[in-house]
Image 1 (cartoon, rainbow, N blue to C red):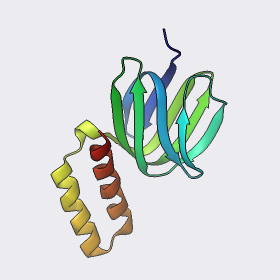
Image 2 (cartoon, rainbow, N blue to C red; image 1 turned 30 degrees about the vertical axis):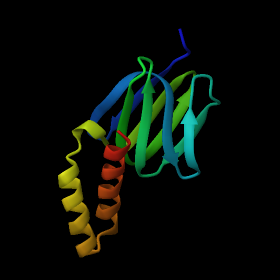
Image 3 (cartoon, rainbow, N blue to C red; image 1 turned 180 degrees about the horizontal axis):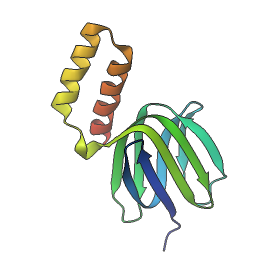
Length: 124
């Protein structure tokens, strides 16, 4: 059996995903990071971007994460996000409309959220 780490992806309002994984890739303020079982302990600030989780079953779970924290120790990874959505939950057409509205209204934060949602759908 391959080495695993336990992952908890939690948003401010709900638990988004929990399970065993072999690799998690996330964007931090220091750059993109890949975490595998046995990784050195870490604590970091999440940037908005897609998070990719390779499950122990060989599936890939992708989520759009908008800010938060990442913590890893003893093969337990916690992603505590302000906002997080699984790519499967994202309506790409709605995200495209939101992006257009944000661009026309010059709302940089809304534009960034829509772009991250669309990138998560594309990675899926």
